[in-house]
Image (cartoon, rainbow, N blue to C red; front, side, top):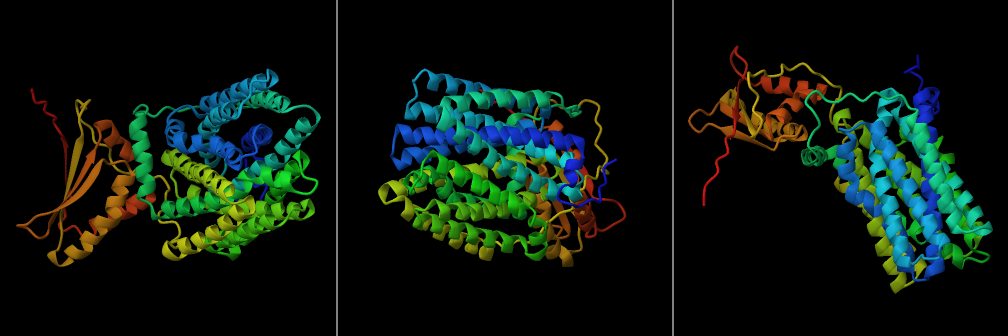
Length: 531
């Protein structure tokens, strides 16, 4: 029986299922870095234009931005084990095609970008489902440690992947990197297939994809906490990606630089991230979320400025070590913050939006800073990126400060589910809740309803929400909620949390009389007019 009060950094690894999937995640991410290193280095042999080189990172990250939300919606409703297996087979297939094209001598810059984009599709499908799995494997108290371990896995792979790729590129050819990637991806799929996971379909059936995506976006849009996390992670990666996107060109331009130097710099970045992970618990206790992210942004900006100024490998290696420490500090701090702000029913969708923010900002940043480097120079692009990143993060902290976690998201299924003889199959459902309020307290009641109550209903998936105030009876208010269907209306009862119960009690405190507020549910009949 795992100890839930064990808060050591390695506590989650004592649980067999987490440990197995963590090793699989390490292997999968090593394959990702092998692919990215080989693709980036191959592009420098196909062309020396900075924009083309930077577009390799854009091609690998843009699919996560474009497909992250649909992937998250599917991960919240499908069997997560089978879905994860499918993603591994996808990346293995793309790696095999890449290897074959290079062996046959048919690679071109455009084709390389297209296949890199196809590999990114696999990453877009994989990340949300894995992010949603982790919180179910460990107690909530161990979630920060589990997130930190995932960061270590990512950055250990940042060392292992580039080192293996660099050795193969130097001794053989990039085609062998892609071939090894395909083999290891299949091995990871075999390990996942041995995971004993029981998928429990929802009693109401699978949520429609379009509805699931809309609800996921609504949940994030109605949360000040989540929007603050997304703003900060977008700023950090938009600017910091200038360094990773242009690193291959920096390595080529250094004294004694080349494929070995490029591999060494990536490995140093990963080592910095791993080394700093042990200090994260203490840093989180010492600094607020915003304070810690601002400090890591400043460290990243300093590293970028130093890389812009030096052409010495011995200076660049410790600089990339510090960059890795800054990267994991920001990513882990904000990753834990968004996980804590998501209930399980929408977790994959929320994490997919988070990954979309990272990859969308990275893709846009790589293209922008690559173009700036083409117009000016690589050092100028890095310097501008460093300065703007620090300035924007400072402004984000000033204009949108962290208010902490807003709600207790513990599930509470205490509301009675409405029962009807023949549930409607089609049509929107309108729910009207009538409150009788002391006229002297209408302003206070209105503030509560137009703020927290509205946000809560929309987060749970309502199509629309309105508050009606009776002109003739100043103490009579009617809350109007429209759900997409009867099934979607019933889903809201499974999404109730402790915070929703507390909000219900606050609303009822305004209601007068011994009888509870009157609730009516109506089917919105749709009429079709003939032309």
